[in-house]
Amino acid sequence: MKINRVFDYEIDNVLRKEIQELLFECFETNYPKEREYFKQLPHFRYLVFDEDNANKLVAQVGLDYRVMNLNGKPVKVLGIIDLCVIKGYRSRGLGSMLLSEIDKSCQNKSIDFLLLFADDKNLYLKNGYRSVENKCKWLKIDNEKQSTLGIGFEVINELMIKETGNKKWEYGDIDLLGYLY
Image 1 (cartoon, one colour):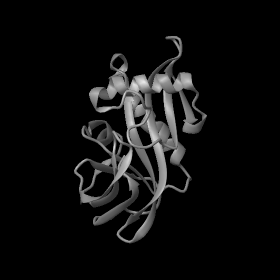
Image 2 (cartoon, one colour):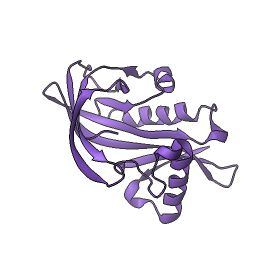
Image 3 (spheres, one colour):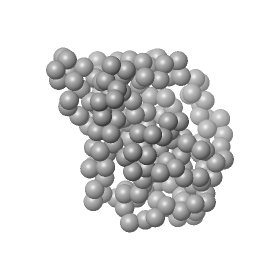
Image 4 (cartoon, one colour):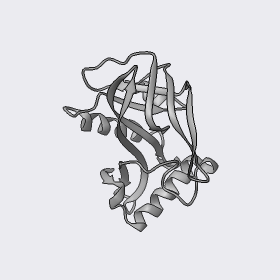
């Protein structure tokens, strides 16, 4: 297996189509078939290719770097978006491999926390993430129309974080200062 880091603005049409197909297969009817993102493009991705199978794209994760507001204080966050592995390659450790690659890339960087939203938390719990219960504020986006709906404000049970810097996570309010991954 080979992992490539790719900035989204550098992705050509052939690879874009492969990413679209991977995301649609993994997330099925919940994912727009014509796009390689759900609500917003990530800044960059890690892509996993099977070199023994004609460099087939088998897994991916998007990453979004931004400042958020945690209880009135700025924190630098790398958001994890749409980590997925196609069905024939699951249970081979590829998800953990991607998370490990992200961890390595955060070392000695200006990143306080990794943050994600997960329905199934098992993979992330095994890789050092923890569930937190903060009241979240975010920009609501209509996925189909690609338009702003307003501001959301509620506790989201799927929120998970991992500390990567010297700051400790605090309970309270987190303003994502943007869309919900």
